[in-house]
Image 1 (cartoon, protein in one colour):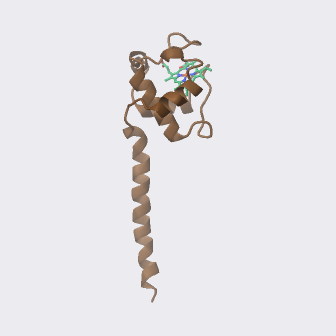
Image 2: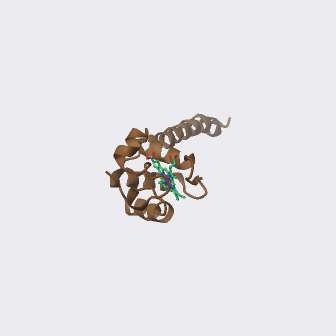
Image 3: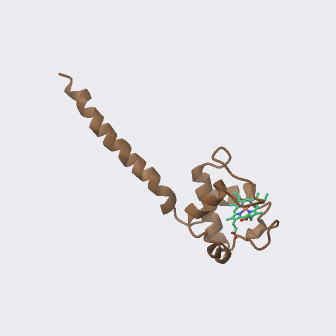
Amino acid sequence: MRRGTRQAGPLMLAALSLLAACTAKSPQDAAVRATAEGERLFLRFCSGCHPDGGNSRYPQKTLSRMVLKANGIVTVADVVALLRNPGEGMPRFDRQTVSDAEARAIAGYVLATFP
Ligand code: HEC
């Protein structure tokens, strides 16, 4: 009898589904906070069109928290979703360019920095 191998299956499955649950939850739960990493990435990828949280291409669509809120962008996950699928005039940032963790750092920085 190979008891050991038979028991490993369910345990492994439980561990994997726990891991999946944690990873799936993190984007929505990501805290809004400005990190040095978020600032660095923002300056690298975003500030060309969004200097000081403005918008040089579409002046009404600034990154001000009030303006974002009026446009339905409130959480870190909302900003990340916009980066993956932006409106006209903004380049799409895919996972090869900006990883999920980087996108969350940028989003936290944006939401915490521009009032
Ligand atoms: C080439 C110029 C350009 C770059 C680079 C750029 N954006 Fe934008 N962004 C725009 C334009 C244009 C819009 C307005 C598009 C729309 O929402 O219809 C916009 C809209 C937005 C909005 C929604 C603003 C609102 O008031 O609804 C957010 C949030 C945003 N950008 C974040 C970012 C972040 C974060 C980065 C960097 C990762 C970035 N953008 C890089 C041009 C740019």
